Image (tube, rainbow, N blue to C red; front, side, top):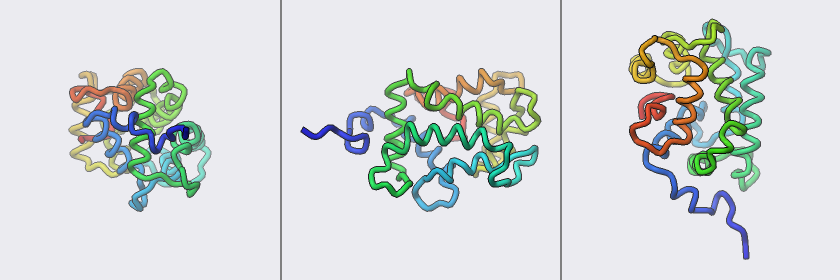
Length: 194
């Protein structure tokens, strides 16, 4: 009997709640930089190709190496196994399936995605002070397709009242974004309104 592959295993896919599907669709849209309907490793690496306090594109920069390395590990562990045709790309459906499988096994989150979450935090922390301020959040999310107004509104929901997102707070929001099935989780909004 043939073993189900991640692509054909409908169980993991059907376990996703509507909020999860919306979040993962939103993330796909943010990552699909060239809007070609598929994601490849270069789309992930684009996150590491902007740096500095103005997030100017600097492909291959040394400053972006940690985020490129962390997303390469995530790609290899979670996403690449779904690239059934070996083209080096995955579709929206495959991407949502991959994240759904990760959400179904939350014990692997820190290993699979923890380093990437930290790297995204470091990217957003433009001045390197260990905190993401509202203006840093807005500037970063605007580079990746959110309007400044949407980014500002989102930050207002994420902020616990001190005007900052610390690393632990960001990790907790990211964990909720990827793993929570609650429609009321504040982590749903980490990368913008759904």
